[in-house]
Structures are given as structure tokens and as C-alpha cells.
Image (cartoon, rainbow, N blue to C red):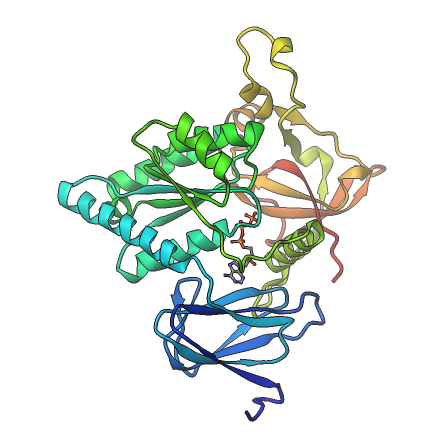
Length: 384
Ligand code: ATP
């Protein structure tokens, strides 16, 4: 084939129910890869492709182009790998969607709420991809499901989110029938497991999809009420394992996008000084203590959500801080802080302990909208 815009072109003819998997090389200097559907029909993680339109995939992308009917596609550029697989669990995923759709139809008939689905499993089994697939299929048949993205490490907060979602369902019938798909993190042992069970009850989930983890499936079947349907699904052989390094790079890239923009859209962040005396910095969560040492009447949850004041020092440099939307004022801040959403994020780029001032990178100009800041372990070094 003739190369388009100077890029090498490779054509793939896919039989029905097969998928083309390709990966774009990672790293800033890596070249993007373009995908074009030439004949037939195909979808990427549930989103249908338009014919003769070029879709661009940036460094580090790991993509599957699946076809139910058969198609031919062209790739422009040099993917790191590209191969066709006939062995995919897509039919099982489609059946799962069909079963959820039946539940939505019944909810419509009986004036009840639609299915609340939680997707669980260890890291790198394709949880996010399955969520995306089920959401896309639901939207394509005219539903309005809600995606709940959960870091289940802090069970108190998830309860709050569940309440917000329930309130929305009370006033919005379409949202109620559409139900929700809850994505969880890959922490499935010990307190991670407890948090999953807690989340299932807070959201009153009806269906739990367990990806590729038989023990977790059996434990959840044992511990969740009998009316919750727990289903074991295989993972796709295409899901790519990501190393710690790769996850860190992906996270750095997301932070960079937050401040500097993405896909050709540039943002221009601000850099300004903040006096220590103008802000209060907290860390959420005190180190955990054995149950037997907790003061009477206190639970592990109390320590996990405890607000610990942080004195600004040089070690604050490069930390990402979230700006809490909790009202200013020490008392109200302390009360509302754990349950308040954040208004945005800043990065500390320099700390001067002599003048008691720190320099921050912020998406909005000074002054900060609120003065309660929460520190997390994530650091970002601005290389721009
Ligand atoms: P985490 O543990 O980080 O939550 P996860 O279990 O949610 O991960 P995903 O993010 O869904 O996993 O998938 C991991 C990577 O594999 C993603 O980059 C995704 O695009 C890719 N991927 C998923 N399915 C396929 C497939 N069939 N072919 C090729 N790549 C795939």
C-alpha cells in the first residue's frame, strides 16, 4: 500500500469475531500510530469506528480493534507490536451486557432501579476496559449508565459517593434505569477485600463481575448477600501487564496533561508564591495501630480518615497537593474536609523555610480558591 503522509502502512484483513491488537511505543520521542477502518465494521473497546477516518493513538497506547462481522483496517506508522487474535472473551462480555440490558428493561417495566454492577479483580486483568465496554454498549442502545471510578482504599469516602449517586437516581429516572458500573482498584486482599465488600453494600450492588480470580470469586460469593449475582469472567489475553515503571510514567503523563493540556490543546499553568501562614496542610490517615491498641470505641476507620496537620518543610517539594473545597476556617475545614470534593490540584515546586513561603504550580491564577490543602504521596517533577 502507498504510505500516507510519509508513514508506512500495513493492512489487516480481520475475520468475524477476531481482533487486531497493537501497541504504540512508549516515551516522549515515540511516533504516533494512526488507525483507519477501510471496509466492514469494527470497534475499539465498545466504540464503533467510522469508515475512512484516521484515529490517532499516542505513545504507550495498547489497543484492540474488534470486529463482529469482519473488516479490513490499515495502520499507519510503526507499532511496537501488531497481531491478530481469534481468541477473545468478547462474546462473554457481550452476553454480560445483554443480561444487564434485560435487567434495565425489567426495571423500566416495574418502575424500579437498573443494575448496579461492580467490576473487581487483581491488577492488569482489564477491569477498566470491561467497564468501558459495558458503558459503551449501554450508551449505544440509548441508556445513560453512570461510571463510578473508585479507589476503594478509603471506605468512609465511598459511602459518601454512594449517597450522592442514590440522590441523583431519585431525581433522574434515566440515570436510575441505566444503573452504574463501578470500577475498583486491583487491591483484593486484606483491607482491600474488606473495602470491596463495604463498597458492594454501600452502593447496594446487584451484580459483581470478577475478572480472572477464582479465589476472590468464591470469597465474594460467601460474604455477599445471596441476592447479589457474582459472576466469574475470563480476562482477555490482550490485556497488557504494566510494570511499576510504566504505571509511574502513565501517571506522570496524566499530571502533565492536567497542567499543560493534551491532544493539541495547550494549557498555560501559573506559578506563584504561597505563604505558609495562609494555608493549612493536612495528611489524611494516621499510621494504623493494631485493633487491640485502639482506644475504646474507636475503629480502624477512625485512624484511616484522621486528619494529621503537616508542618511545611523542604520535604514538601515536588508533592502534589489537592485543594479541598471545604470551607476555610480551622473548625469547619476539619469537619467537612474528608467528605468534601477537591477543587483542583497544585504542585509544590520550591520551599523557602527562611521566608516561610512555597512556590506552587497551579492551573488557575492566584489566589488559591480555598486554603485547606491535602498532601498525598504522589510527587511530580516539572521538566518543562
Ligand atoms: P489496573 O490494575 O491498573 O486497574 P486494569 O485491570 O483496569 O488495570 P486495563 O486498564 O483495563 O486493566 O487494561 C490494561 C491495558 O491493556 C490498557 O492499556 C488497555 O488498553 C490494554 N488492553 C485491554 N484489553 C486489551 C486487548 N484485548 N488488546 C490489547 N490491549 C488491551
